[in-house]
Image (cartoon, rainbow, N blue to C red):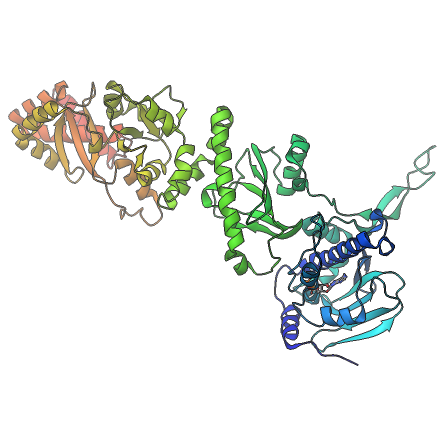
Length: 635
Ligand code: ADP
């Protein structure tokens, strides 16, 4: 007689049968996990009653495939089920036998029974149109067969089944245009799925596999080699996860080999981070900092994330919630018995345990990178060359929210031997009278060093950081201060180095030359918001500096952003500064007094030069060149 599923189960089944879930393949993981749980239970009971158990090596999960019958069979020699248990466990969804078992028995710690497989068994209906289960329970003389074609209901009858344990026969659905269910009968596919999801099930998963062998007597004594296909029983899983072993017992080769195999990177990682945490959440993490950024790392196609396992069973390949953006380069996995195996991504996103673990993981990565910076500078610099940009983007893109985590991991080239320095090192070298942290922006370190303003700051005995990445200045602005010291762009007014006396003198000069300065500004046109004399330029005649929040360098970057090319980007307020201590200052005064026409041309040439010095383009080069020729010819 056909029995009806309980309403809830019916709904769940319906969902499974009509599932458009893309990872239908997880059904195998679920069945194998159930089988492994069942063996755990039998093994546990045999501890108190040895007559119920097997030799430890005899426990196994067997996978058989039959292409003609289109069936896939998963057999275990675990605890089995009575007909009542079949009824209770497979007739009702979310009736977690594992959960009940956990409550009833105080288990020793070495047995891991994974509970909460809410939809486990039913997931097989994603690929099957009929499922047959034959089972004989531990201590029972009779066996039962449970069979179902889905929502219609199920039958349970007595049957012959000599061994203790369970056999689950999946009758695969017919192939359709979108779905090739018969793939699940292919050796390569099953091998791939077992490796992917169930590699660390701690009982052997055995399957009959085919191999091509040289026929005996051929290939020797001048006979042509002939090959034959032989079948053999092969254990498909490696059983003990590398990360379950003690770090002290794992060699660098093993760590690296695992990384290359599982994360498809041919270069050995720069750093391995392997740790275990017990407490409110218990988990193990095996993380790798790659030595090289993947080719698509700085593109939209790159997906970050860590692999999640629940007691060695893979749940998801890339859980992005596990990694903050600024550490997106980290590869690896987290395994926690507390994770629930669930097919829904939404649940993962709201999982509190997951969040707590992600926080710890982040802290750990930060500490390990800090340690690398401290103990192996060369290695850290190599790392930074690959991923430093991401750290800087990370800091900037969340508005400096994580500056505590990141600011000490940053490196910049500086005027101090043109090497990478940390902000900490910079600050530790600051002379007492230096109030701010100075930086200069340019496309290369050399051009940053050649800026007139850089020279002026260095002449005071101050170190200058050289910013050559677009994001640098934005990042530093989100930091705002480091160790209570403000950052100052050497090309902006905030870098003002003059003493009060010098300021007073310059102000007087500027006030006295108002007419000239206004004349120069107007001759230049829209290019600058003001023109002034300065005494801070060392040997350089002129420079462009900026006022307000946007520097000339930021203007360049913003102008390159999509949508801003047409000139919509915010503009820097540019100031043309003329060195009062350079002969050009007197020349300008003199020419202005004698010949306004000429003074206007001089002004334009000065402005064009100032733009060139700080790497800004010249709008009309041919006009400029005739202007220069005019000026040269008139002397
Ligand atoms: P869950 O594993 O989360 O409990 P399932 O639907 O996968 O949910 O399975 C329901 C129950 O059926 C299990 O808890 C277990 O008691 C029983 N069961 C499933 N597969 C087996 C098996 N191979 N051997 C013994 N019992 C099994």
